[in-house]
Image (cartoon, rainbow, N blue to C red; front, side):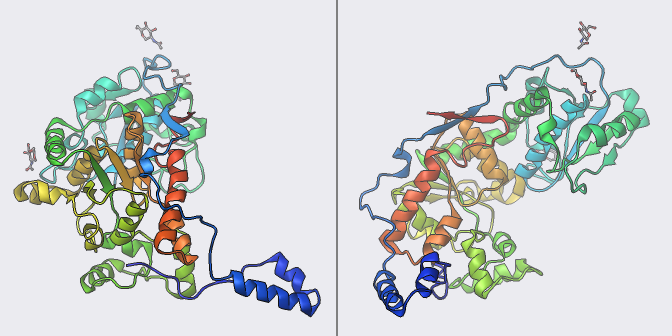
Length: 448
Ligand SMILES: *[C@@H]1O[C@H](CO)[C@@H](O)[C@H](O)[C@H]1NC(C)=O
Ligand SMILES: *[C@@H]1O[C@H](CO)[C@@H](O)[C@H](O)[C@H]1NC(C)=O
Ligand SMILES: *[C@@H]1O[C@H](CO)[C@@H](O)[C@H](O)[C@H]1NC(C)=O
């Protein structure tokens, strides 16, 4: 199913037409005549019939850990701690991980000691929430040694007087703020605080040693715990090699959240989307079209399949579907790419049924940082984390599909071969500069 914009827009402000209008009618007539003959064929793409698979293109940029992050601490940790910080994390697994990583940088910035973070829900086979249900605590402590102080448990003298930390809520602060100015006083006063990092922090003011601590902890020290990793490995081993891990985002909540209108969905999809919609109504009409054109609408499985074909990914490619439960309209993909594997098709139903959402997310993450290729239809927290880990492991076949470009091309009236070729060219531009391959924080571009 494709989304077409209703009506063709040709009211672009054209300085030429403005000039012509002010000239004599003869030119006016000539102008419209010429317009008439050039309008119907968008010929800005020269269609090449044979494009290679996108991964064959020569990349011009590679992402690698920045030089200043040498996997060694930059300076010695101060002997005295300013207090204890617990990072409280919420949301999906990769969002919690992102916030925890930020919290590590903050703890180092404030010369504080980290206690193990609190993960809202992260259980493996049950709801016993906690960091250790996902990550290997011993490895984390070992790998962060010398970068930041970490304790498994609060020391007794603090624990006696401070059962629970004082919560310093950073999330509500809208403007850019500085943790030394605003959080350090609480830390010094209360000795044990909890924070949930805000996105707006002044990371630009971090001393380098705090950034180094963040990079080391986030990208070298966080490994899945043994139980989870063996489950993930079992999954990985069952997928035919080589394979493409496809992070497809077309679940009811995602579609509802996007406020996009889709035509031609099955009635069960429509029902599921409506149930997830709540107060968020879909944009329609002119605004709906503009919204889509700005790249706001999740790609459907069939649009995704079309783009994969445009990128010359062979139809018999083994694809692992890294996706949440309740993916809609999957037929759109599987009718084109039939070699598709999912967690539920590989794991025993007993295993699968007992797993928490974040456990499934951990499995998808693990498979995706070990696959031959990774393609995401959306650039979310998981895709950023996966792209970064893949860059670190030199797995360069990573790409985020560009929904804005897709929407623009369709809006321009491109279809079939022409559309496919335009998509190849545009995505190739993204691929050669490694777009989506790494976060700028700890990774730097290397020109090839
Ligand atoms: C911390 O203490 C040790 C021994 O007490 C000393 O050798 C070291 O220089 C101190 N480090 C700092 C950063 O003060
Ligand atoms: C933290 O310790 C470093 C030395 O490692 C020192 O330069 C810095 O001023 C300290 N910062 C705070 C907030 O105590
Ligand atoms: C949760 O699972 C872990 C690991 O399987 C187990 O050790 C623990 O007892 C379980 N907790 C509950 C509350 O079931």
